[in-house]
Length: 414
Image (cartoon, rainbow, N blue to C red; front, side, top):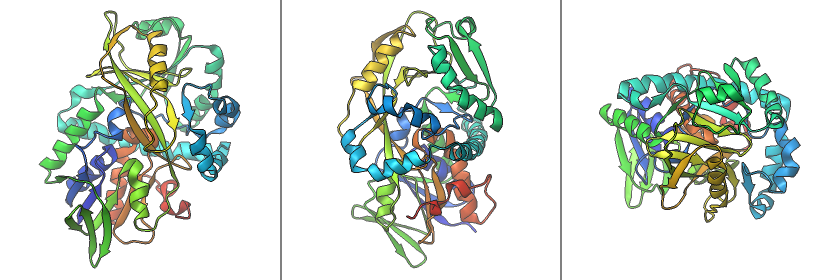
C-alpha cells in the first residue's frame, strides 16, 4: 500500500530515505532548513565503506583511556564539562567496550554497509554520477610498527567477518601512492571500499533523482510534530504539512525532534572539522588516506585536498574550536605536499552517536506512522542507502534487506 511520507532531515540519510520511498511509489516530501546535504553530510571523507566495522567504544578504547583522558590523542578531544554533565551516558558508552558487544556490532554494521554500497552503485549509475565514484577509496596508514600492532585486533575481526584487505609495506605504499612522503611503514587497503570525489555533489545527484521521481523538497525549519487521525501534521513556522507517515532522519537534531513526542534518545555528538588545501605540484593522492597515528584523513576531492579532523566530544552547539583541525593540517603536510589553505575558515559538523555506536532504524514504539532513522555517527554516507531500504520495507510490511534487530528502537528504554 502506497502512502504519503514526510522525511524530516536533508542529510544523506534523509535524502536516501526520501529517494528510496519515492522510487517505491510513495508520495514523499523532504524537509530541511538548508539545501540538502549542506550540514553534517557535507564534511565527511567521501568514503563508501563496507569495512568500517569496529565501533569507537571497543576494548582498545579502554586500554587507551588514560591517554585519551590526558588529551594526548589528536584523534579525540573532549570537553571535561560536557563529559561530567553527561557522565551516565559516557559510563554506559564505556560499558559496551567488550569483545562480545564489539563483535556483534561489527556483524550488524557489515550487513548494513554491504547493502548500502550495493544501492549506492545502483543510484550512482542511475544518476549519471559515475565521474564521482572512486573504486580505490580507503587506506589506513601507520607511522610506526607499534601503532600497526594495535590495529591487529581489528584485522582479526575483519578476517572473521569477511572484509577483504591488503597489507602494504613502506616500498609498496610508495608505489601505489607516490604522492605520500615516506613517513608510513605500513598501510592497510580496503579492497572493496569505494568513495566519491564530492559528498555534496553526490547528494545533489540523489536529490535530482528524487525530484525526477516526483518527490518534493521543502525548505524550512521544522518546529513541531503532531499526531492526528490518519497521520501526522508537521509544523514549519506558520505552515502545516500533513502526511500518513513521518521519518525522523535529522541526524544530530533527531533526539531533539523525538523529544517533542516524549522519547528520550541516548544520543551524544562527535563533532568534526575539515579544511581544503590547494594540491601541490607533485603526484596527487589517488584515494582517501587515514593517518591512524594522527587520527585525521587526507582526501582528494573536487574542492581540493580535504583534511578531516578526528573526533571532538562536546555540546552539539558549542562554539567551534579549531585547534584540532589546525594541528591535523600541520601533521598532514608532513605526509603529503600541499599548498595554501583554500577555505576562509574550517568547516564544522556534528555527527549523531547513540550510546552503543549503532544507528536506530525502526518504527517509533509508541506512535503509529512514525519512523526513526538516525544515529549513524561518522558513517552516514556508508550506511544511508541500506537504512533507507529498511524503512521502506517496514512501511510496506515487507522483509528488510538484512537483520534489523541490532538497530531496533526498543534496545533502549526510550
